[in-house]
Amino acid sequence: MVNEKLISFDLYSDFAFFKKPDFNDGLQLSYNMLHKPALLGILGAIIGLEGYKRKGELPQYFQLLKDIPVSIEPLRHECGNFQKTSVKYTNGVGYANADGNLLVEETMLIKPAYRCYLQLDLTNKTQAKIYEYICTEQCEYIPYLGKNEFQAWVTDMQEWNTLPLKPSASFSINSLFIKEGSVRNQRAETDIAFAFDSMESIGSFSYFERLPTGFNEELMQYQLSDFAFTDWKLKPESKISSLYQLKALQEEKIIQLF
Image 1 (cartoon, helix red, strand yellow):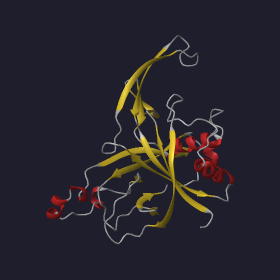
Image 2 (cartoon, helix red, strand yellow):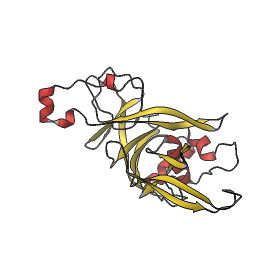
Image 3 (cartoon, one colour):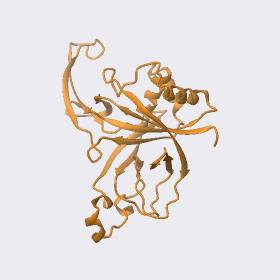
């Protein structure tokens, strides 16, 4: 459609903390991958939308942006993983611990980077504002990756021509995608003799993580989906929905929008 634009931008920081709702022996855990609710929060910061204000009420940015189809491609990773470390600090704010200071330990990602894809409807004023701000490298509030001190940089905006993917041969997906069945069973077979000449034709890793895609508005909890990220080639008959082929200048990508 004329009024739709599919754009991408690169997002990176020195550190990130995408808090999981669960704990492990007092250690607060972080998701490894940027997820959709976190990305929508970053977009909300860029154009100046409000965040959380009242308990039990979804933030303005999520209500206005939740229907934007997105895709996320990890960059500078090691087989889908980002290096992690843990840090201990004292949380002395009054609401953290009424009896005194609270010792907190949490994991954080080191130098995470992601390419974020957005399918924007420019007839929607909010989405048109996102397009304008990203194109002109503006932001109302400083975006960050999970915590105020983890400032994020937004660079390398690009527009893409896009078509729904109808594979007739094996293919690789450049982005995270929602797992539908066993990824291993959808992996394309590789000719062994050819594989010795080009190890890239085999693919070296497959990464899985259960990630938030939205919120259950009654329970005010994350809605989760099982995601995969792999450099394996997949069979053309693989059942993975909402795949798109992107082209820009001499670059081509295959991504899933969700």
